[in-house]
Image (cartoon, rainbow, N blue to C red; front, side, top):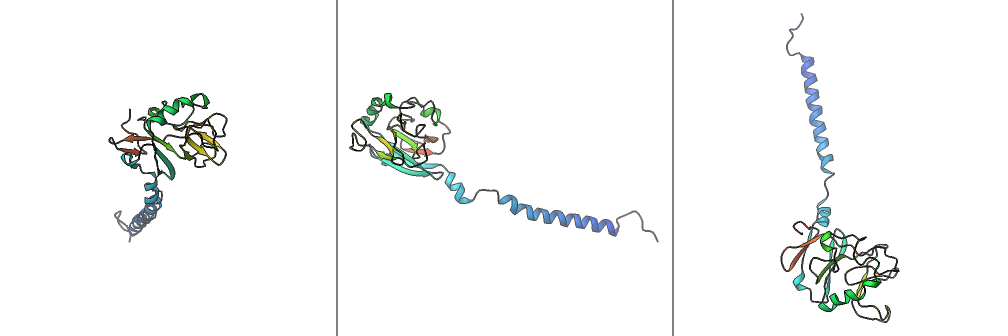
Length: 196
């Protein structure tokens, strides 16, 4: 006897198989798609870093890490700021036209506020770590040295604004990361939202 044109057993099995297949595919796809999200450690490495600059004495520098890179925060003295003018003729890119920094740091100080310098502590030649050498005229750097950063790997020199000297292997100035002041004493490295 022929069945009526209603819901047949074959139709039921087809629908049940399709529903089971979709549920299985969804169950397999959710963990697969979730695996593309960065880990908590990776998210923390890219997160902005707050620095209290009120605790940095004038003439001193603080090292912090942001995105796995060393960041130098230097509290420049008035004397350090005056010395910046003395080396302009010896620099490869004194106006920071070929270097990497936000527009608000493309000035003679390479910073938002003249006394606070924020740069990546990574030489632009081969990514070595330049050493802070703030003393004037040390025996190993010569009588014309007025302070700055020195990369011992290949001899690149940078002034107290992270600007590269001419005639050294490093091609550009030290990179200025995005940053902003949250208030008079705190900067946020890794975010420049709100800077003008």
